[in-house]
Length: 305
Image (cartoon, rainbow, N blue to C red; front, side, top):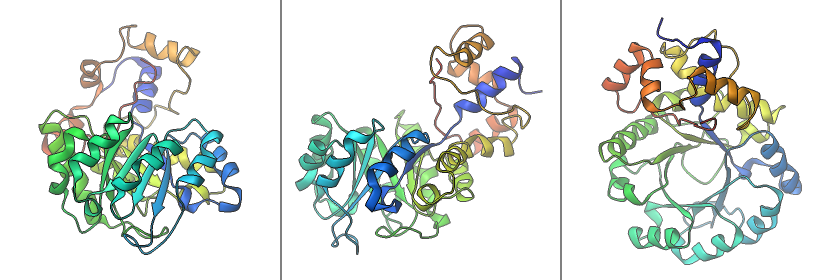
C-alpha cells in the first residue's frame, strides 16, 4: 500500500493534484458576456482567458481593452489576457488599465522580448509568453526566469473549436524539464482543442493550466465541465498508480472549514510539505517522474495549508 493517513488524507492528496482551468471568453455568448463571466466564476474557474486578436498576427478579430474593462467588475477571478497581436508592447498599458492580472504575448510577434516582459512586470502584472505550434520549445528558454507562465498553443491561433495537435504536448515536457533544471517556478499552459478527453493527455504531459472554450461555455453544466477538467490531473495520476481510485471525491472547503481542519489533522497538523508528499506518492510514480521529467508537472494547490 503506497498510502497511509486514512481516507481523508487520500482525498486531500487527490485535491492537491488539480489542473487549473482558464475558460476562454472567445467561446461565450457575446450578447450576454457579463452573465457568462459570472457563470464560469460560480462554476469554479481559476482564471478567465481573454483572447485579443488584431486580424494581422492571426486571421481573426475579437475584442479590445474596452470590452475587458466593461466585464472586469463582474468577477474577481484573475484575467489571463492573451494578446495575439503584432507588436503587443504598444498596447500593454491599455490592457493593464483594463484590469489584466496576467498578460501573455507571442514570442513571434514582439522583436524585443526581454524589455517587453520587464515592462509588464514593472507595472505589477504577471508576464507570460506564448508560442505557436511551429515554434520550438527552446525559443522560450532564455526568458523562463522572467515568466509567470508559458502558453503552448496546441492549435493554430485565431479560431476556436479546433482539434489539439498532440505533438505540441512534447514542448510542455521540454519546458517543464528546463524550468526544473534552472530551479524556476513557471506554470505551463495549453490552449486549443482541450476537452474532457484531451485534458488527461495534457495533464500527463505536465500541464498546469488548460484553456478551454467550447468545452466549458457550451457545456450543459458549466460547473461540472470545469470540475472534470480540473480533476484530469488526479485522474492521470490514478491511471499511473499514484492515487487510489477509491479515495472518493476530493475534499472541498475553504481555509478554516471542517474539511480543511480534517485534512490538516490527517497530516498531524504539521502542514503539507514536499517531504510528506514524497512519502505519500507511490514508488511507481516516483520512478516515472525520474524517467520522464515532464510527467510530474500538475499544479499542487496548497489551499488548505
